[in-house]
Amino acid sequence: MAATSVDTEAHGQGGTSVIAAHDLDLTFNTNDGPVHALSGIDLEIDRGEFVSFIGPSGCGKTTLLRVIADLEKPTAGSISINGMSPEAARKARAYGYVFQAPALYPWRTIGKNIALPLEVMGFDRAERQRRIRDNLALVDLAGFENKFPWQLSGGMQQRASIARALSFDPDMLLMDEPFGALDEIVRDHLNEQLLRLWAKTQKTVVFVTHSIPEAVFLSTRIVVMSPRPGRIHDIITCDLGPDRPLEIRETPAFLEIAHRVREGLRAGHSYD
Amino acid sequence: MATTALTPVARRSAGQGRIVPVATMVLVIMVIWYGFTVYLNARWQFQVFDRAGEDWTLWQFVAGTFSQDRPVLPAPHQVIVELWNSTVMQDVTSRRSLFYHAWITLSATLLGFVMGTVLGIALAVLIIHNRAVDRSLMPWLIASQTIPILAIAPMVVVVLASIGLTGLVPKSLISTYLSFFPVVVGMVKGFRSPDALQMDLMRTYNASRGEVFAKLRWPSAIPYLFTSMKVGVAASLVGAIVGELPTGAAGGLGSRLLAGSYYGQTTQIWAALFMAAALSATLIFAIGAVEKRVLKRTGVQP
Image 1 (spheres, rainbow over the protein chains, first blue to last red):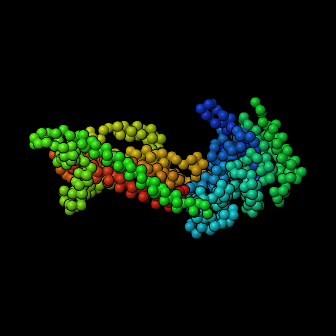
Image 2: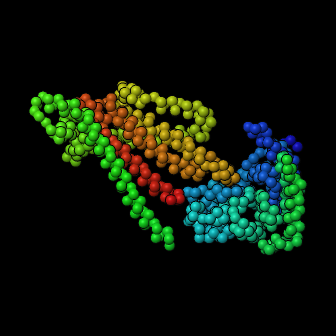
Image 3: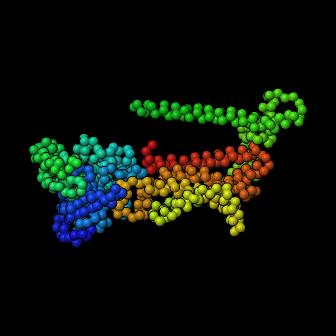
């Protein structure tokens, strides 16, 4: 159990689990002493799921996503991605990562930004051009290929960063509060687009958010987390079906799930 | 609509707005300069009049201080006449031509500047990629810049001459010595300027160090490079001139300054100084022009 990020466990192998975490622990050593960021995380995510991590700031939801992405190493427990260690999965380019900020390189055009992972991964020129075109169309940015990032709005920049994450066709999309910095109207619009994209591409999506409606609207399952130390408080299945217009947010089924999420957040949150 | 209507107006007033303050400054400097010319050259002028034993008017006195052969401070028009006589009126290959001397200095400056920039970038690359180098090298680099260049320049020239290196190379090496430092400091900062997200992104692509450097660190550092190069090229010119002082007769603006001070030719010194300033301004302007083009091509927000 004390082995770190080794795929000795049978999780995910042969089955449909793409992410299997067992008894995961992560402690950061900071100047102010150790910070217990994750504690006893047990989680399995199946192929094609849309799973949201929700919780107050400091609950470790971003940290958990970064562990999946091999951007942080767990201090204890095991985690496997597609039956591999996170590092092997990262090297196999198993996922595309969308950050809180678009993180587009300002000296590259939108097209060149989308080509960045393709260049690193050695796709040839013709293939890069094809993928730039296809992925820009996928996020409704056709025709913006030669614009520089600063010429686009925040929402468009974030869509471009999603196109960049999808350009090399990874199995998984890891998204860390991608719409957190956008206003509500743009956010609703992008949520709808994201659902359509997910239906079209059939990818496994792991999505970090602190918005309850966003989590309920998008997810097949919602992982409610609580802080100090970061742990999973509850996992709520969100069976609203594949077809979700924005109006679904006023239906009783939606509100019922949102209520459960809110209760979970409240119970897990200590107001000291 | 409003912006398109406003832009030309704003641009025109910006152009006008620049001429007036610059002209005012030039005028103020001229007045102060002429004032000091009278004051500093007065003593010699009194002696001239005493020796002549004739009466003199205030106007004759002022005119006298403006037209001495070896003034303590030459008047601006004397410097301009000297500049004219030693540039336009001379064949560029003549040793009397300031252009000839400026070219000698410029060639040493450029060679030293190129070497300094390359060395600076190379050291910065080492420093950001290796912790041990970062810790051990940086204090030495800083210490190297605290040594007065006037003290070390003659030694460099003498040592290199003893192994058969004379002329351009020793001067360029002194230029290199002065110009690599701003480039190291600027480029270390530039190479480290990508934020955590931009670095994490490359990690998610499993990019190698080389790819991170080529696709992220280097483009991020470009604006820093140009700033460093502007500082570096000015330092390079100073280095070349200082390098020319001990070599004396070999030519260049430095030797011109030295010769001027040997023979009390203050006007010649000032003319050489103005030439050096013009050279430096031209070099910085040229780098600025390249910078503008490069940054425009890399989509930097205007």
